[in-house]
Every structure is written in C-alpha cells, then in structure tokens.
Length: 417
Length: 78
Image (cartoon, rainbow over all chains, first blue to last red; front, side, top):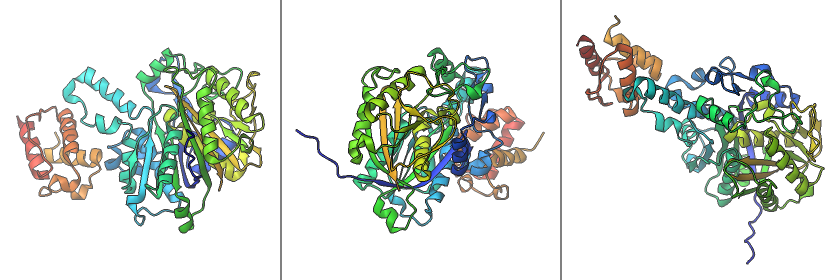
C-alpha cells in the first residue's frame, strides 16, 4: 500500500523573536551571528559550575537583560528562567508579526513551546533547600515552575492565547519538532496562528556534572570563547547555552488576508527515530537522513533545490562527522552549511527554535552566516562549511536539521517568503 | 524590630509584585492576586524572615490583609 500524499502546505513565518547569548532581539542577534566573532562576555565560567571539568556556558548577562524589570515581579515569580526567556522572545515575535493580542481571535492562537530540561535550575535550588534546611522550607512551586510545559503556559498567560498549547520534548531536537508540529497543526486547520519554538536555560550543577561524566562537554576551560568549534579539526565537545528562539507561523490565507509581511515559509517537516541508542546517534546517520528525506518530500523539493543548511553542528566529534557525511550523501557538496552554535552555545531544546529563526533570516538576506571558531576544517567533513565571513548566495530553499539524545531526529524545509 | 504590618507589606511588594498603594487592611488577599499558591509561598518566606512557625495557621485568599497581619503579629509575640 502506498503512503497517502499530503497536499503541499507552506506555513507563513510572519514574526521572529530571539533572546540568546549572541544578543537580545533579532536585529542584534543577526548582526552578531553574521559577524561571526564570539564575544567573551557571552560565554564564561559560572559560579554554579565552579570546579567542574566544564565550568562555563553561554549565558545572557543581567546587565543586558533585566528580566524582573521586563516581566514584573508578579509574573516573574511564576516562571523559571527558561519560561522567562520564552515570554520575552514571544513578545518580540508577536510584535514583529504586527499582531495585537488584544484584538486577535485568541481561541485560534496556538502555542507550541517546550524544552528538553524545563526548570532544572529551580529543581536544583530546591533540592539544596531540602537537604540543608528540611522539607518545611521547600517551595510549593516546584511542579509549576519545572514542568517542560511551563514555557508554553507562561506564553499563553502573557499573550492571552487560548487555543491549543503544549510542550514538545525530544531532547535537543525539541525546537525543530515543535515547529514541525506547529506546521502540522496549521495544516490541519486547528489554529490560524501559532507561536512556536523552544526555550532552555540549564545552568544546573547537577546536570553539568553529569554531562561532564558523559564526556560530552568541551573542557577548554582556559579559553571558553573558542571552546565550541563546530566542524573544526580540534573540536572536543559541546558547550551549553541558554536562550529562546520563537516564530510566529500562520496559515498562509490568514497571513495574506491581514496583509502580513511573510518573512519565509515552512514548507516541509520530517521526523524519525534512530531506535539505536540512548545518547549516540546512529553511526551512519540513517535516522537524520530519513527525517530529511521526509521533509523534502513533504515540501515537494528535491535535494538539488537546497542552497543552504543550518546544521545541528554541535562541536562534538561524532555529531559533526555523522551529520556532515549524511548531508553530503543526500544533498551533495553544493549547499552552504553553517552551524551557529559557537555564537549561542548549544541551547539544547532551544537550538532548533533559534536556528530556524536564523535560517529564516538567511533566506531573507540571501546571506549564510559563518561558522564561528572554525579555523581548520576537519578533513573528514565532506561538505562546504562557511567559515571566517558571511557568504552572500542566491537560494530559495534551505534546510534545518536537528538530532536529539534518544535518537529523535527532525528536519525542516524552509522557502523564501 | 519592624512591625508585622511593615514586614507583610514589604514582602508582598518585593516578592509578589503587589502595588504598595493597594496593601490596605480591609482588602481581601485575592484582590491582590495572592492566590492559594502565593499564600503557601508567602508562609515559608515570612516564617524564614521572622523565625516563626505558621504551619498550623489556616490561610485563604479570602482573608484580608489586616487578618494576615494579625496572625503574623500574634506569632511574633509568642
């Protein structure tokens, strides 16, 4: 029996919101990412991580983002940091889309956001309270603040969005799966507008200690700004980062009817599971290849249409090699590949949200950002990785790939607006 | 030592974002958006701040600011 063919559906991307270590606000993030120079103030040691083999991460300083001032104490106290970053990115994305939350049909506005780890910093704090001060001092807010759907519910409350909402949690592919899920919801007609993407903030001593034991993190503690170096011959692991990247997507008829500026289209989505290992990706990249093939078919695109790939590119030895080998096998050597993780850190669940927003910007500007810190390409990497400087190019179709622990793979195909 | 009134109103403003002008004795706590979750959090914060025990005290958002202050005051005297 042949599989049913979905009619083509291109969701309109009408708004972007970015709150990352590479900048707060889409304009600032794009300027910094296309410059491709890691700011020393964006990545460095954290007190919570002192003494660990990896004691640094990418974060957004209190001097550049005063969350209490932006959100107000009453709202902020009901969110852990990942939810705070989500709300701020959502406000930017909705304003960028020219939408007025006091006037929209709120029952038709969906929210699909989540994260891999949710409010793990609050969980850490409260566990310390339990062990040092006893159960009578533990906060009653652990469940509402730490659940991975905290970001989605916080955004719904902040915007007054009353349509379906949910968290999607597939480890480091969460952002890409969230956007793919949003694409499917718009296609099914269950909403007109969806605020989607991911948020993450994992400055947790417990989680980082464990990731060090896994040998997944870079240990370049003497030079944090050069530690994350995707596709470089000297890469030694990923560096965590906090951030949020959200998109406003709409049914195309809805966007056109209100005269919205369509920044790009999400034309295809594919997801797959390795069914292989808890952490390691399938060594031949068969899972991510299957997800990308599905996404291309969903978009009615062929490999030769793809001009740009915003790769997962985590800076671990295996991910970058497996992913690049798969990209070459499926797409050939023509697409310009980049990884933005050296600018933002690996934001885990948020990665796909931030990087899909950057892919939208690349399509708009016809410009591929450089892979920061890539000095000496690993000779085994067979694709064209943009390094040193942003590269202008003409392309109508771009791809975003994500791989998550547990073997969750996802790919999106985006087109020019 | 600061009065119970001062401590209660300062905590509500600083920790819960309540408008200082709205903290008046006759106002029910729900009007200040002090719901049941906020009150349970308030309970442990004020216990820590004043080193008192409010575990057996019944608090609902229908209580007024004045009733809450009186409860706290009675414990600080004890």
